[in-house]
Amino acid sequence: MLAFFDILGYIDTAKGAYESGNQAAMLTALYAALTGGRNWLEERAFREDFKDIDEAFNKAFAKDRYALKAFTDNIVIGWPIRDDAESELTDAVGKLIDFQFHMAVAGFFVRGAIAIGDAYVDDVVVFGKALLDAHEAESRIARDPRIVLTQPAIEALKLHLAYYPYPRNTLHVRTVLRDADGQWFLNYLESVLYAADDGGSAYGALLQHKEVVEAKLVQFKSEPPIWSKYAWVAGYHNYFCEANSNWFNDTHRINLELFRAMPGLIVGAE
Image 1 (cartoon, rainbow, N blue to C red):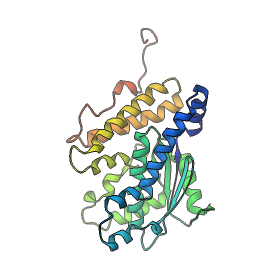
Image 2 (image 1 turned 60 degrees about the horizontal axis):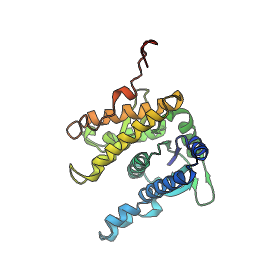
Image 3 (image 1 turned 45 degrees about the horizontal axis):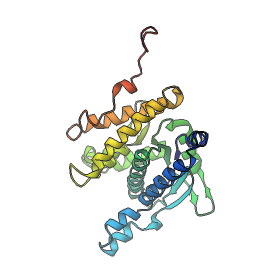
Image 4 (image 1 turned 30 degrees about the horizontal axis):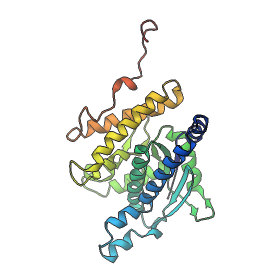
């Protein structure tokens, strides 16, 4: 199983940074975001929090469960599949939603795909059918800042859900959503609900996510192809708030006027 993803609009953002003379600031922000994100992917933060638990638990989350390769804005992670891939898929989804949320709050939105198939990943090369499938899905299907599941990954997840007498109570029902176009994608804002209590620090991070998305909507208002991607994020953000209305209210929601896709009169519209 393999996940392939990259940072949305990386080249354009880098060009803009150079044109405005802010390349050093962008490099600093990008480096910090990727470093923190990779800490989640490589479970450094997780292992630090639970460093005193028993050896059997630590072995279950050992680094040899997966292989990671990154180059600037492109990241590939491969998981060797054992049995039916249930533990590997669960591991992948958990890692990726934390990474995606961390990057988004830092202002870097990622797009990618998860594929199941043959793959080879080491420090030198990444190769295999799963890479081709994930790359194609990222470039042709993901479209917006979302990490989608290819059809084999969806079928595997359906199989796993069928193991349980009450599928609605399983973890995947919260961590994977189906979009309006039928694509299954990772619900990365679910990372917010991992907070220790209702007042946990991640709840403040949701407000940061709101602020970042609103800023992107304003920044790219005159560039429709880019603006529409952040409008998708805004809709997803508000859906998440509404789906968890017992925790979040209008304070957490993004202003609808910033991404409402409705026409208007040409006179008096200014």
